[in-house]
Length: 539
Image (cartoon, rainbow, N blue to C red):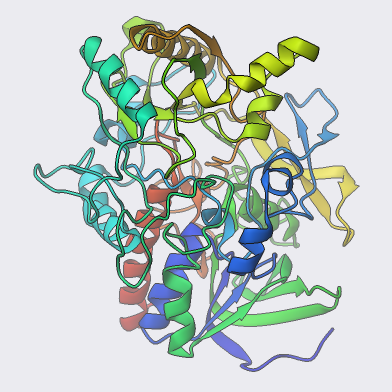
């Protein structure tokens, strides 16, 4: 084992530097605490982002997670197969570096899905232990910190509140969408986007170069930990940031508290970091994976897993999508990923044959190479004709709430190992029947919008090409230790110096992109953490 570096015992060890981890690092160093941040990936620079392209970031997955290894199956009766499935970032800043930046608050009813619509057979719906009113001030803070651009704050409890930045100028594709949905009686509004529409808080305004989703921003107009919180934390002198630190075990003492995080550096050397408190922010897959690898005589099924729920209830949204050809050039390559949205169809209505809902956004058909990969079996002249349509193809995508299912999970693959000899995570997931009905319903509604727009034709597509980047569940929070992993403050029921602040804490997924909620919840947890520390309740 390598000799200890610098401080012997830190106040806090944060594992993962993405949306939730970035907030905790920023807030805790600002409060005067010494923090060591362990990130399994490298620290990328703006020059690295400029060297990325569609092949590295989207097709091959080498831009942000070149060492990612995982396996996938639909049920526990199948043998999981190796596949690069997860669209995640394993670098300083995490997936938040290459996110699309849509920044939504959850609807009030989405915090209480079980009370409103449950129980649902085959699903494990649960109410959140927090509600929209408690989350509201932390959404305010997240939107202000990230510089969200838009009009009136969507799902705000107080009317009249507006986002800190004005909306981005509408592109032609957004205008086509706007006219179409108004014909159908819907109310369009600017999609809230955490990309500066003007210079804001020492960050540049968007240069409208496109390539937002799955790409890092070379001018920091897109908010992320590397543009917002981490520079502030480093400036305090209280942050020890260690990239390429693969944490593989949380070691406990005789009382069951975590005493150290053990990690491998880029050369494969073993290190141990000691701290008083440990915050997991490795994403829904990574945090559960680490807890399950941290087995001991006290925790034979994984650390903090007395409920047996670590890794379970994995969710990753339903993503219905439609392309349509229109005479108007989309100009989707200008500006952020989405310009306009409607939410008129979101409210849960069992009369439709399913529960829960989705937001619908106007978008653009990814990038040229991804668009080409949606051509299916076309070849020759037919493929060339399909490719020539790119500039006239508009896109619609829904972010649909998928139901938590006990059997959907991440665990340790018994066969496959990574390059360090550690078991890779194994994803087991099959959509609930309700998810499939929701998907079909919104695909139909999006085709109606395409028709109203005057589309020459429309067709259903898999815009994510069989992958996803929205992972939630696996360490759900709740009030009952037998039915949840974490309490309402995202602190382990069983290990009192363990906290989890990524999307793993979500009891349900909601019908919106999850990042703003992860950030807002991390601010809520950080506030509690600092108050408890000042009361000397964190030892």
